[in-house]
Image (tube, helix red, strand yellow):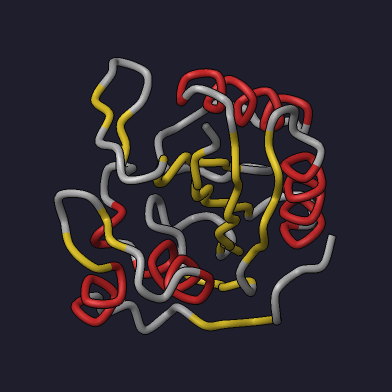
Amino acid sequence: MPVLAHVGLGSNLEGPRHQIERALGALARLADSRLLGSSSLYASAPMGPADQPDYLNAVAALETSLAPLDLLDALQAIEQIQGRLRGRRWGPRTIDLDLLLYGNRQIDLPRLQVPHPGIGQRSFVLAPLVEIAADIDIPGQGRACDLLAACNDPSLRRLAPSIQI
């Protein structure tokens, strides 16, 4: 039975808009899955070390029959194809794909935590998520729109309408 999953996309290296567009194209071609849509692009200051460019972020809605770990493997394969190097924590990257939500499931495995850790405090995730799923509930945390209202990130700005694939 297909599940509605939400994937966070982020980039701040090598043409971030292009990197996100490429990743959305890869999500659209993912086996046993269907890309339902994506948010606008949002720019924000880096969450980690400040000596890096601002990030572009978006969220995609994906209907998938892939099991959670299989979906995670597929997301990491897309990252690898796009040149993602895992260096310092919260450092710069060509592309970052995070499995934010997998239906209404809560998953706590060594390789995967869903909802994604920190989702409820990150406006750069919540704003694009609320844009495409206004009434979505974050399991164990509450409505995404309520969580977003409690966030305060003056650096967050909406840049462009949703990307067409």
